[in-house]
Image (cartoon, rainbow, N blue to C red; front, side, top):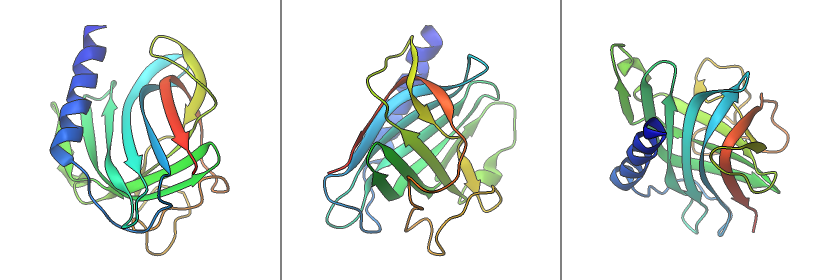
Length: 175
């Protein structure tokens, strides 16, 4: 439980440091937010913190990824957001990397993309009902993105991606 508090604390501090960044147009009022762990074979593998909102001048917000397995944390501002019903695609550029015992600075400046599906209320300590994709690092990962990504996200509902159970809760609001 101490690791969870430390991880969530890091996510909150990162969100405050990065702050809102504006980019491509997104539907005003659309939002996605939450914290949770992506589970693989029932085990916590990755902690996520997502806070993004569509606005008149584009999306604002931040994304944070923390690998439990590899002691790696990275994130950055949200530069694209696509919300379709209960599904969201969140993307941007990696501006912060922290790793312990590994050389991962090569991630700086690369693009990230993650998909979230909000299937109802969840909580830390219980599995589901939400799901999250792996975090795709682009270029390289096999997912179709628009030519101007990360200014424009792929369609949240129709883009093929994987899905993992979540321990936590993500709230997707399609206005």
